[in-house]
Length: 291
Image 1 (cartoon, helix red, strand yellow):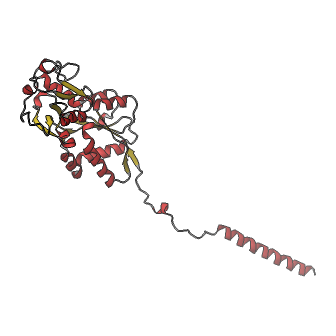
Image 2 (cartoon, one colour):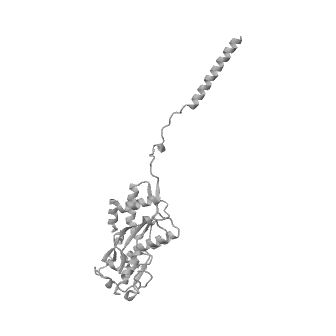
Image 3 (cartoon, rainbow, N blue to C red):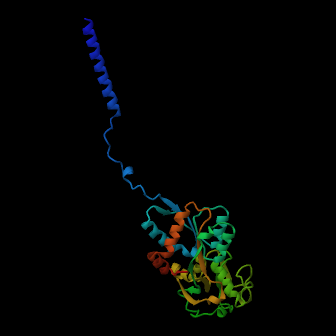
């Protein structure tokens, strides 16, 4: 009897050990693999989506909209926020007040200098992006003013004139040119007043686009605008190109801002915009020449 009990105990113990072993092995066994999800199938190096905020001179609006659309098409991970097109001086004031932007493109070296002196741009990323011409325009329907009009003729007192105010680079260049024929009192194009026969014949406005519209509507006889504005707005015709030696060189500098949230992506976009053959076609279509 003792032998039977001993054998029975051994058998029960063996069965218990076998059951325990199966339980342990079952717990350690690898579960069946589930189908890979879309997330795990995505490339490991997939680019992270970014949104760029651009501050740019008014005169760039239509061209830059097209360039941004092309870049976003080629780089789906990049989107553009509502690009702010305003007078360059106004954009500098917005940056000084704390407005957020990744890129600043000015229509004036002086306005970019102001931004640089205020510590608002990454100076190492700054470069001259475009050059432009200053032209005198009138309504497309106006046949009373001869083409080839000179500056001296424009300030004879026979015509009303519209230029941008001091926040508008095109207005600064216009006043520099007017100073060379004695129609503006400060050669810098700022801080002076209109004198002589045009003293009471000049209308000021806050953007080069508005200046162009004054001529288009016939509100004034002549407007001083960039040559690119003729492409941008239409409805006007060029009377003459202002001699380049009557004003400072018209240069559009660009830079990544000092506080850019997407500095690397901003620099990549500017590099592409200034060098890509398809982008260059767009700039040229709208009257811009790369510097």
